[in-house]
Length: 315
Image 1 (tube, rainbow, N blue to C red):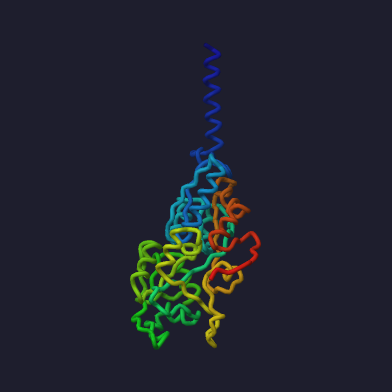
Image 2: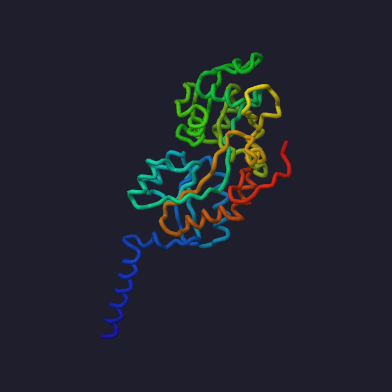
């Protein structure tokens, strides 16, 4: 009887020890770089590539489970700030104000740059204006240029309609920051409910110009991408306003992104506030490693941590 009592107290002591080591929620300490389960928030512009990365990662590490929520950039940042997630996928670093939130928690966000991405512009297949300069884009997105005829006197199209995937999206923020110096977008700007809805809208409206993450139209081995590309045209962009030469216009193909010929480029980051080496850190290391970077390469984006040798261009 005495030995049973001692055994029971020993068991209680062991449980108490485990809880004292793990804090109030010991489940948070159960994940390692290759095991356990976590939730991450992902900019929906990168849904195709991150879905592939997660599927492959979980296929290799059978005891790892990553649940991804795909949201607008603003919502992803809020998830980080509210501690709803400790891992996020974004196309920008945190601002000083956002970093200050983590400083108060004595946390230092860790950045892993995993890819070079681009913002693509798409138009209706009946639109002949598929070559635009950066200056012409500035005029369109600032509202100075309102009609297609202002760009081409022979155009039979009417007023320009600008379409984003989401009002709070990373592509909208990128256009504001990179092209119109943070100024508001013009009244002829609208948001669709999703990337597919954006492509459908451009397909059905001759006057539309859509802004989309190139990740949605870059993987030509994906049947969905091939279907999208049959519905729209991708705009070629030139930094040089004059003289006109087709050689100075570049579409967001992988080679042109890698060589910085295509002007609307951006980086893709995995940001972790775990404060330790958990599953989020393991996933970021995988995406930045050899296998993850090969997936990036196949998708049509440019790997950030491995050299790229351009051997040919897709027409």
